[in-house]
Length: 128
Image (cartoon, rainbow, N blue to C red):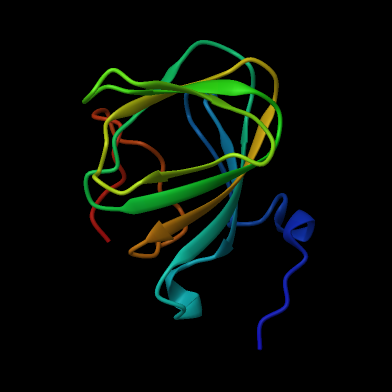
């Protein structure tokens, strides 16, 4: 059994800050936990749109707090993201996310993240 106080991950190797300031991610479950997926608490500060494109991962995000907008670059659709909204990047969708206020997401990745990933120049994480 694994029991984690996610807030206790702050300041550890599982506390990952985007080099460009686009997010902070507390990596609660990572590949070495051998669950087949990873789970993060991701905090996105308000600011300009951030471009991400998970070419090698599927991601589901549940919004806990804050407000922003999600834009799918493939089809031009936009969605308002606020508490209670879940979005799933099931087709490796290139997208932008703009936080209007600090947004907190609970994110699940498959395959599981190693734990230290940050976005590459194309917006993706390296292949796990």
